[in-house]
Image (spheres, rainbow, N blue to C red):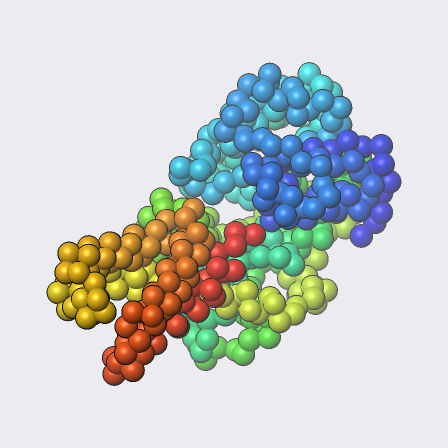
Length: 438
């Protein structure tokens, strides 16, 4: 990668702790730029980008030029890496991709700042998804403002870390024996994170002419080929055959993923992502080649220069297993609570035998049974999932200690009611790091 001296540049990166944003922030710092990151969550941002100057900001609340005044003070270039896939409780595409970006354009004109905008392949007013249409509306607002502007439209981004499309590729590559795929023949052009960051630093340095560029490799691949390359890079064995999911199953998967998004689980299999994939991820590499003097690395070259270690394989496997782990924990605690209520008299007899009064025993069984049901439901709500795991571990530990004191005979019970708590507690411990968002 060519080096630039950006020591005189003040750069504001929007969405700085995202998959692309974090890489761009580090690349700009490596070129000596003074970088500030705008993030929704300062705590999360400081964990991902330690040592980076961060400002709290939410595009859903920056809807007029005046809202941007403090953020744009002394800023030379804004790099917009922020975005959302679908509308939900946390994301508003029209605000994030269009209204806030139009306000940003006005604010940048007032402050004399330029903009590097990350858009998307296929963005257009008549595109098939609200995601692409809203991206196109933001692009149009930036162009209409007259602000100095670079619009970058990356293909499928391959990076060292995993998020979004990269996480999906690795999760699919971790499926053993058989490769299930929706749209296996759809054409895809990729771009490595290193080339993407180079385009940004070239733009900030003024070495890339203003304009709109597709950041894509020269030759498209089928999605099946991209997944096979990812599988080889990860070191997983080749599958025996590929199974193309029928449209009705693909639609069902998308609807399920959309439903899970309503409770906070932002799956890369949501309907927008699958619609975009069905359309293909292809662009024209020539304008960028003509402007920069070179193209971007091919998929083969990207993976050839990208180190792979055990943690990448482990993360891919854990991403694949996480839905099963969460579902199992939810089912275990729900059934534990329901069985306690159904077998109320039997369960309370155990406590009565340990010296409890009948009313206290009944009240205790009902209380803890309802608590189990709450824990089984709480882990399904994504914002509470990690805390629910912690509570499950604490409650399981309490059960083991309390039962060992009041009813030690349960350890030798043929059905093993106490023994079974141990693997459930361990599964909650395993789930905790899997639930870390970034």
